[in-house]
Length: 114
Length: 116
Image (tube, rainbow over all chains, first blue to last red; front, side, top):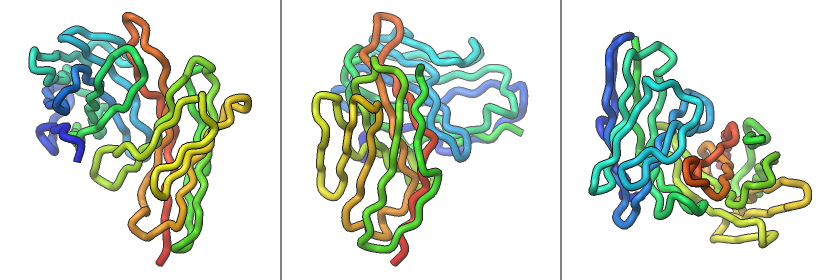
């Protein structure tokens, strides 16, 4: 186990709704990254947070947004849900935003949009 | 320039065999190459990682071979066991700039089956 926790485990939402996913990082880690993993594919980088600020973003629209809190936990918010948003959402914590270093993943939140 | 290509898509070996999974990258700025193992319904678990200043790294039954000039790296699993049956992902990242962070770029994954 990595010490990275995510909630909820599963979630079912309707198209057009909004969702908030949560992540607690591993002790000693100050950077949280979020990834989207569609079925049968590798994870895709959404964005990264360091010291409560967004620190890099992948090719995702602005309706994907996030927060990081002083205790380094993080939230991923998705507005105006679309069917294609159905995926496993993973957060990963790491020790340093700048240098490539080990990223440890949580178990993920499975989001289904109907 | 951000792509990481992984092959094969699936692989079946017998217990005790040595499956080999290959990855190729384009961006020469990448300088950290981890491998992850993922079981169904779980998050990816870090197995082993390498930086381009070495050509090989071993941790237990897992070995990474790295060829910087060819921009390729591979994972070897020695004495494979049925419990190794999972999806394996290679990834790469580069030093993060002020606003870009150190994101991981993943390959497409290899589904490994180890038969008893």
